[in-house]
Image (tube, rainbow, N blue to C red; front, side):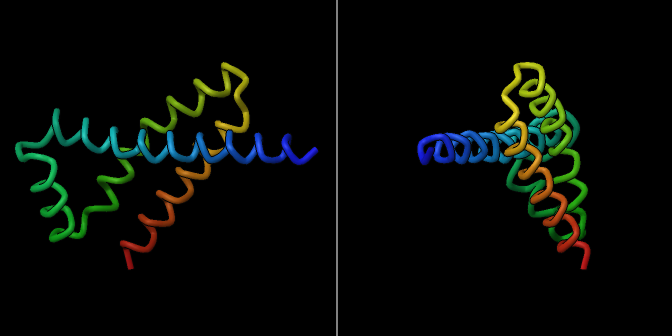
Length: 98
């Protein structure tokens, strides 16, 4: 019984890490295709202009694709992990606004 719980936790953690990575990849892709600056400069400018939350939110769009991909493959615990990563992104956005 213990190994089942450990396996579920590993799947959720794996999905969480994939969600974080997908969010960062989404941010990078947005910066690469739509902004004129490199990644580091864009992050610095976003911090200075108090728009880092907007950048994180745009990056989280990629989580939507990953989430539904896991749902379609019936990897529900990984989908839960991606959902947790998206909730974490929402909390970070909320805290950067105040």
